[in-house]
Image 1 (cartoon, rainbow, N blue to C red):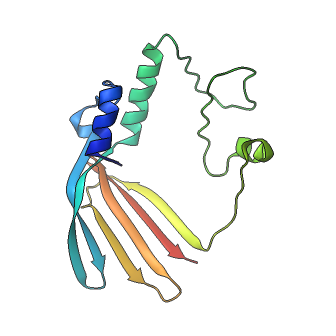
Image 2 (image 1 turned 45 degrees about the vertical axis):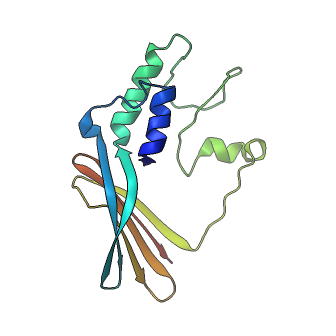
Length: 158
């Protein structure tokens, strides 16, 4: 998710970075917040979301076209001897991060909140839902991230 202002700054610095098909984007100017039975509309101030799969494919294609980038997609079991930048995207349960916690300064602690992040093949209007569950609030945030898909996130106490 990014604001129109931030997207313009990216386009100014890297014109090709966000040059994606229109169907890869979802934009909105209003968000609905639902608390109890009340429905409150507020401005979203020009927000956009991009399909993650389309964006990743686009960035890989741009990297492959650059003479100064060597793109390697594989399972990494050890860090390279020399590199200016290494990007590891191996998730929350990262074995590499855990094995090098002292080197990376990684710390992990369990919180009291359960969290769920999903994608759905339908368009959901941008919204927040807040509901008191007694021991804490249920918070739902949903928004479209492509022409025909949405993100649905929820957090609730254990």
